[in-house]
Image (cartoon, rainbow, N blue to C red):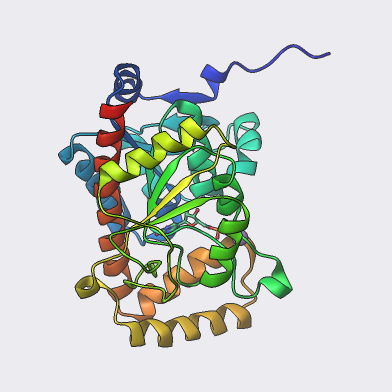
Length: 312
Ligand code: PSU
Ligand code: MN
C-alpha cells in the first residue's frame, strides 16, 4: 500500500487573517473566484472583487476569496492574488473534479461554486456567497449538461447565499434536481425562487425565511439532525426596482441561446459565453443587475455568518 501522501497543508492554505478568524470562531464568508475571472468583464471585475471583500468587512466578518494559485488552494487572497484572478490570462475554470489535477500539476485557476463549496467546507468555513448557481442547461436532453454545482451541494455542508440559479438555465428542472438530491432551499423574504438578474423566476419556493437568525437556526438543525452532509441554499432576490427589465432579458437571452447553438459553444465555455452575450446585448444592464445581486448576497451571507458564529 502506498503511504506517501501530499500533506494537506501543502494543498489548502488559509491566509493568516482567515486562519485566525476560524481559530477564534469569528464569522468568515467564502467568496468564489470564477465570477471574477470568467463571469465579469475586465477591468470592472477587479474592482468588484475588492468591493465584495469590503462589504463582508463592513458587516463585521472576514472575507475568504478562494482560488487555486500554483497548485495551492488559497482560502483568502491578498491583493496580488485577487489581481492574478482578475487579470491573469488563460486562467482555468476549476470545478471540484479539477482540484487534484490542479494540485498535481501546480496549475492556477478560479474556482466555481462546486470547487469553492468543497474547499470552504474543508477549511472550516460554513457560509458562502455567490451570484447565481449553475444548474441544468436548457438543452439537457441533447447535451446532458448539468452543472457540477448541484452534485457538490448535495454532499457538502455549506450555506450558499445566491440570487437563485442563472436564468440562462432550465430553472424548473434545476429545482427538481435540487429536490431529488436533498438540498435544502429557502427563499429569503420571498415566496418565489429568484431569477438571478430578475426578482423572480416565476417558480414557487416552498420555504420562506425572514432573518439571518432563521438561516442560522436551520443550519444548526441540519447539524443536529445528523443526516447526509447537504447544503442550505438561501435564495435572495434582487429588489424588483433594481432588476434587469424582464422583456429585455427575455429578448437578449433568446438571441444568446441561438448564438451559442450557431457557434456550437458547449461545456465549460457555455456559461461565460451566455453571460458575456447578455452584458453586450443589454448595453451593460445585465452586468449592473448581476452586481446588485452579488452585493446583496455577500451582505446577507456576512449577516448569516455573524449569527452562526454567535450561536456556534
Ligand atoms: N455566478 C455568477 N457568475 C458566474 C458564476 C456564478 O454570477 O460566472 C459561475 C460559478 O462559478 C458557477 C459557474 O459555479 O458559473 C457554473 O458554471 P458551469 O455551468 O460550467 O458549471
Ligand atoms: Mn456545464
